[in-house]
Length: 357
Image 1: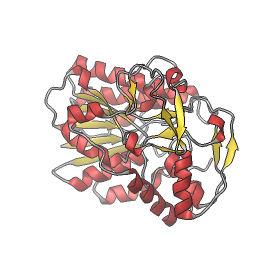
Image 2: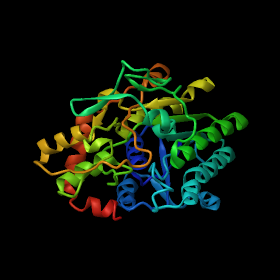
Image 3: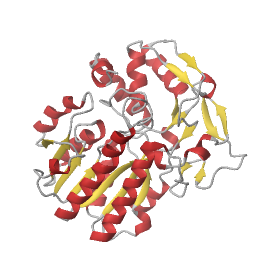
């Protein structure tokens, strides 16, 4: 089996490539990366040693895919993953659409040509912002929790957001590009009889994640705390009660193995949530407590002004993934945080290398 991973030298792409290459079983893993992300170059040598053949190319340029060999499956792990992309002044809205949507179209055309299956790593950010921003919450043990005494939005419960939750705009420009990519992928699958799966992931986290607050909050917070860099609780009263789940990308490999060999799957089951769930969820305040116990005290500033698209509680319910795929996360959150901390200890320059602006 030949597998192509786009964004192979990014955090998620490289983690999947390592795990798939280590597993062997006759798999040949190739990857494509444009190395635009600071820090991505650091993964090239390690992947090459594992036998992963890496092509330097840009998904936005269709001809850059021409040198790629035929494959059986494509895993699309390439994206600008920031919910602030296109509106934060660092990237233009056009660049965001070209990266996240036009790149997906080029990959789908590649799949059509080679009769390859397609797996899109999507995001929790395809879910509608207004009902999530207005979610009734209560603070307990330094973290927000949904207030179950109030009426929760359709498609949500104490276990998190289900696939039936609204995806109506606004979902952010980033979320819109991923939602549009999902629709196009399913349409290509139906039109050209290609196996297609949409894996909506919670916050992916682990050692080697690039240290940007808008893209890898767990890594950013731990690395910043270890180096005594400035940190702030932004919005929500400046208390740090906002909550995110976390999932290690290698926990997706068992799922990918099943999807590679899946029989015909009903159309409604081609989209599912994959996350660490409520058991993995941590607030910034709780993450600070963990860092203080690990590294010692560090002052955190307060900025009560809200940030665009921020949400008080964002946790995915993966019950459907368990039902359809028999999937469960394997890496507990404590192990994820410890892995990041070990990497932070060993790489004193990681923030400067992976997030230079």
